[in-house]
Image (cartoon, rainbow, N blue to C red; front, side):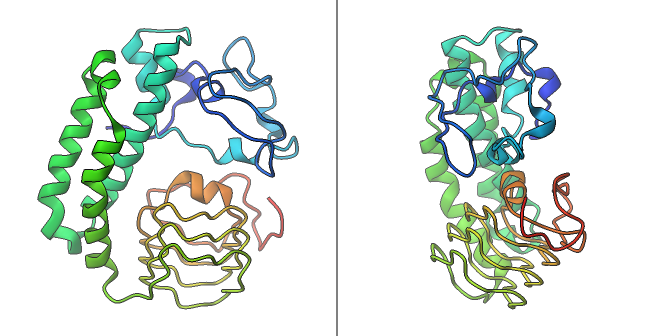
Length: 260
């Protein structure tokens, strides 16, 4: 299943469905279900080429995991009905779960839970491909409750005995050059954390907040559950090593950068 966004096959659902709040990520607030003022008539972003200087780094980092084009295809074309917006929210959550499951299934050391993960994947895929009524009847939280312990087990099997920082508040900390290989950093707050040159190989970064974290020259080879949104919200350099499935953000500075 394709989990990469294709904006050319969407109608700007990500510019309408989510809410956002005025912050360092967004220049103004917008309630859910209301179109962003920068959404053009052709469903493009009128400031796409200058999002960061315009105060919208959150939009640059945002990833729908391919939910936009799937919902448009399921509903058969244009328009942004309330049903489509609701379906988009559900499908995005389910596609994100599929991203994590695919990661866990790619880990040979997690073989003991591959069977259960494959079953969970099949159930999620059936929900998102079953049509609008199937999506409407689906509770993403129920699938998340099934998948979460499997991801934790796959992480433990893959990381072996790495350090434990699950849920830790590491905001702004100086962790440059640290050996964090195999660390459990899931749900940790790493906002503005200095991770330059850190060894993050096989680290569990599930739902870790990497906004503004400096990943210049860090090694994230094999990092678990890392997403395009997390990478896009961090800062990196030409020397930052990412998992093969993640593209290098176009806005990353070629050298260690102090600003997005």
